[in-house]
Image 1 (spheres, rainbow, N blue to C red):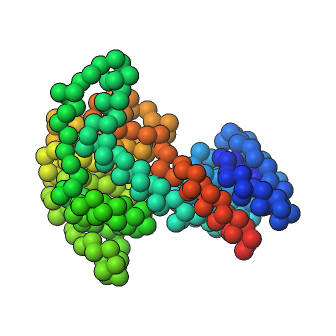
Image 2 (image 1 turned 120 degrees about the horizontal axis):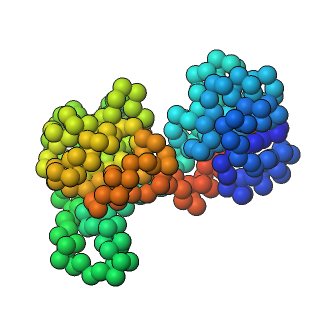
Image 3 (image 1 turned 180 degrees about the horizontal axis):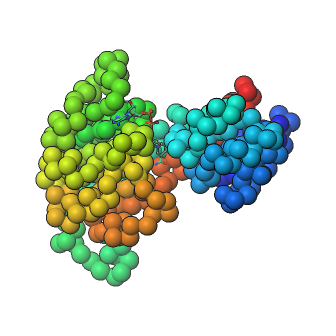
Length: 301
Ligand code: NAD
């Protein structure tokens, strides 16, 4: 097969595909060139930068393209339904990055509790603001509310329990076997909002408006910390910023944004926001596992 890799992939996976006799081309295409480029490939592997939309599929389906693989979890950068209607197969690598994303969420929780991000900036400016940033809180004994209790949420729950947090979860799908295996009880959203000291989002991209908005924030505890490593549109940015400014929300940890690259400088520039540029899955280990899964998908295809 001729395989196009648009957003990079682990080198050992590329070598493996070549050993299997496939031709692999690593090349990013701008949106106006992507459709025509895809015509000449049997398969395409994207991460999050490349968006495969209906207009690209319309052009590509006239050529060789049969398989689109998202190296990662969220497939919101691919018009999946349309691709499948056109006879293409779309696959992703759901479990490969769960631990990495959960660890980043945990990192943001520590950053929110102890001012790690802003204190680092302040020191780089030559300051020693021990009094300002010496007002941390511990995670131990606090309640973590996880919204979306799938793979990543469950990895995070295990770590949070390990440091002595109480964990509760709200999820669209409630699976008794997951509740039994993790020891994390499912609660309704309002109960989670009322009880949690930390709220971490791990549900897919919102389809009917942000889960975290002015109404849901009003139901939270004062001084809550909100972490989002899921998708940017799960939070209403303006409502979060207003709540940070009023002190209702103590701090936020953000890896994902409604627009990427992020445009809301008032939010990600806020002193109580710990932010990263969508790097949840960007670890050596996750990228190796994603590469290995991509190889398996192509082998089986
Ligand atoms: P998953 O499918 O295993 O779990 C998602 C869970 O959310 C499921 O239990 C589902 O029932 C639940 N859910 C769906 N809609 C919901 C809603 N409206 N309210 C509450 N719960 C809802 O997914 P996962 O692998 O754990 O990934 C979770 C999220 O993390 C996805 O949004 C994914 O795109 C994102 N992600 C981000 C990065 C990153 O780099 N930051 C990397 C990988 C995944």
